[in-house]
Image 1 (tube, rainbow, N blue to C red):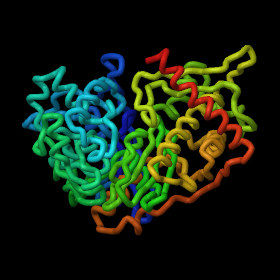
Image 2 (tube, rainbow, N blue to C red):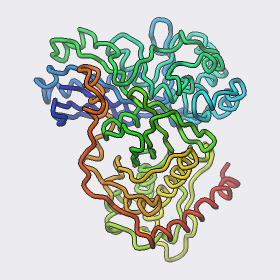
Image 3 (cartoon, one colour):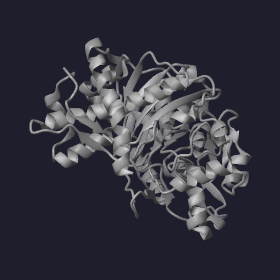
Image 4 (cartoon, one colour):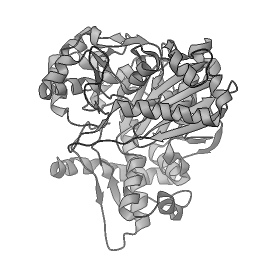
Length: 485
């Protein structure tokens, strides 16, 4: 039996998986976000820990025998968050999260202090990444910075509370800007650019390797005779890839979660920071990946649901299973700024082309298409990095909508696969990593793909119509930037 934990932004999720890779039980504990100022986003690390305890305690109530038989635990987690600890391991301030935009000026400072950053870290300096956050703390909270002895990412902090050891793995470490992504090791030069050294960093392991064992006290709390092995784990997207079996070069998926990800597995380090493509390590050895990331995907539909006072399901129902033509309205989904390809934290969204005949259905379709156009920007950025995709799976909450997947297939010009249990998420991948760490089994043996329910192919006529609409979408960004930035 294996336990996967996903330390997300909105919840901590736990899943028990048996030896046949069947889900035995799941639990979820909600989390809250603090926004003390516009553009700020923080959480208290203690909240993650208490939610973890609550989630596992609930599993004990639901499936005590299965939990007591757990051999390995794996962690998936929200990336980039900065957890600052003092010399005694105590948290110094709330964690600054992945969607926090305060460190924009520090990004420029970091790139000036370390000109080789792009080649070493494989990425532009984004405000959401970890390293610029530490420069911000140094500038604005110097006493906190001076007392900082260790910097952990969210899931590594939970791992520390589980085991007493401070350990990080390659996929999550790639999102700090302190990792030499090609060498899979901390970069002394990148650390020095933020006035840090290796002593501030946790020990590195591969995601499928053992990082320690949980404490005897916690094992006893959950009825485990032998403390389970803790795997290195994975950042949330890499964990999702492990759960999908996306471990071979060319494997790809679209994630329609709160944010959006277009993922491509690679067998080499292939950065293209100029297009805001992320080049990260995968959670298994000798494997990397590229990602295009958009900051508002399913959350854009959630926003429109709140504004219109209509549930997402009721908004989608009138649209049917597939589009007959593009919406006459264009939506730019920059509700929280945008990452790929613009790296623009200040840009904001818009509806363009409203008239007296515009209906709620027209606007709903426009929202879905705007997100799809943002994914097309990601696809073009991956193409500029030399990556060509032939098909992709679709996961995340948005994957429930066949209409949305059909829009995406036409906009991307790719066959897209609806898969069984497309919302299983990072916790399932974390459980697979736990199994590999506990048993020594290989990724090829464990990371099998899910069953594909349906493949939706692009329609040539609609594909051309959407190509024309995407050209309009791209032309609107610079005009919008002039009035929102």
